[in-house]
Length: 289
Length: 163
Image (cartoon, rainbow over all chains, first blue to last red; front, side, top):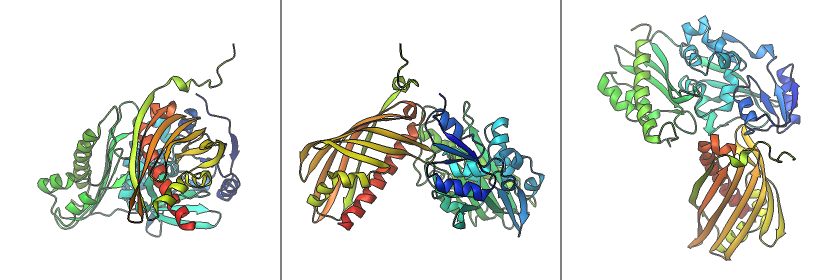
């Protein structure tokens, strides 16, 4: 199908986009368009107006500021995937980006658009949660910062209020005692995550886990922090038994999806297996180990 | 020959049947809850996304509802009909609506139990969903139904308190 009729406006600045959004209640922001346009072609979404923010140059950047990494909302998956700076100071980001969709999607899709859309099988929400990111959101009334743990609320539903535009994502730099990994089972047709696990582990002496941050996507109505797994790893020495025990909690307290491709039971099994793989990969990538 | 009005042919695509059931407790007397649940003005305020609810005959209404989650949203137009009414304990609601993403047909039984001044609302029904949303968004429908029900009862509680 083709989309229903819509008006199209291109905003030159973020302020212009915010004004347009305030004046047009049902308008949708167009970033990379690779979640929104497919939905519009299926007529699952039919916004009467699109506000294109794709030409706002100063929404696209990767920089270090005040000891933090700041990424503009319009930064593409490809820009993150190929960033030498990020490969050095936050490797989870380029690794996660490299798993998204395909080359064409990565060239257009943006981290801001993807996080604002919050597809239940999207990759970014898992990485954003595991990195304890801050999501910076702009509106006509100013700005606010939302912690990743508070951002993803339900299926396709985030803490973004009407009239707000996601502007920036902030994460902390990793250090020499931190290992990070993103592992994913790609759906063979769509490439979406049947399961995706983002892990960031900070080690103390030897293989004692000082901090574990693990988030899982693809299996439920939204990406979630695997708190039970984190608790079972924190303060413990990361031997195989500890890890095996910890990952058995990967699906604790979460409603798992089932569909034609993978039943809920199969996804629960996959969540354990891929969490184990993510932990192992993260441990291997600790620079000082 | 004129092309069919719904040129996308969504009517022919898959159709799934879903059970919707649950309970909700309201700290309000049963008679009051029943009266609220059959008041079209209250329903219009409580049904998430309801833009219009107009009575055509007694206990029959046409409705326009914007439904969806996140970016996936559509406007559905259809009819709502209340039947089998036994105040203050029971009624049945029959719904039929159609929109861009597909169509919905369903019916549900509402049973109200008095528990010492608190009312326990039990609802149980079946929904048939068809069109694109049924073909690609099975997961979405379940989650959306849950969210809608929860928002509905939240607003109903507010209505009960305000009057």
